[in-house]
Length: 249
Image 1 (cartoon, rainbow, N blue to C red):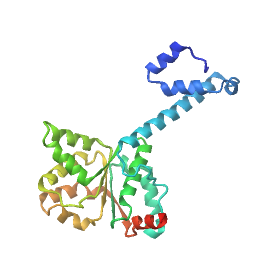
Image 2: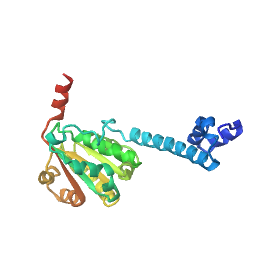
Image 3: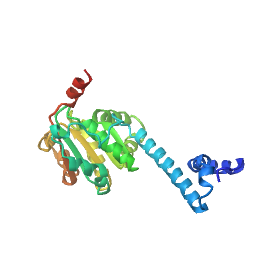
Image 4: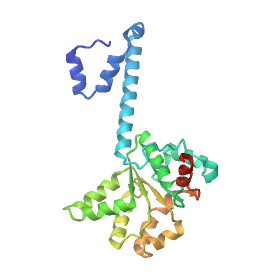
C-alpha cells in the first residue's frame, strides 16, 4: 500500500491530502502486509488524522498570539500556596464554558499569574480546536484608535474581535477607558454576548468595575453583558514573578 506512483501522489497533494500521503509513505510494508486491507486503511487514516489534528492545533496556538505560548493549565505551580481551586481549573481545562458561552474573570494582585492562566486557558481551547486570541487591553485600545483612521476600519476591527470563539483580554481596566473606548467596549461586548466567551484578567474586584468604567450608562451596559454569566476565579496575592526570580537565582 505504501508504493504509490508519482501521479497518485500528485493527486493526493492536489486534494490537500498531504497528511494521508505521508502516512501511506511511512507505513511499514513488512509489518502491515499481513493485516487485512481494512485494518491497513484504518491505521493509515488514524495516522493521517493525528498529523492533521496536530498541525491544526499548532496553527491555532500560533495565531492566538499568546504572551506565554508554553502555558499549560495542567501544570500550574503552587496551587495550594496560591489558594487556587483545583477542581475549577480542571473544569476550565475542559473548555465546556465555551460551549455554554460563559465568560471567565481571573482576578488577583499584580504578579499573581493572571496572564499565564489566561494564556493557559486559551491554549487549552486551541487544543480543543477552538479559535482563541489573546490581547492586552492597552494594545486593544491602540489598535482601535488606529482603526479610526482607515475607511471601514472600525467595523473591521469589531468584526475581527467579535469573531474569536474565545477572547482573552489581559490587563482589563488597568487604565480607565476613555469615553470613545467605552463605546467600543459596549459594542464589542454586545456582539459577543451569548455567542462567544471572553476571559478577563484583572486586578480589580467586581465592585470596582463600575467606577473604572466611568460610572455612567456605558458602565451599566458593559457590566450587564459580562457579569451575569461569568465564572470568577481568584488568583490570590502570591507573587509568582518574585517566586520565579528566586527559583532562577
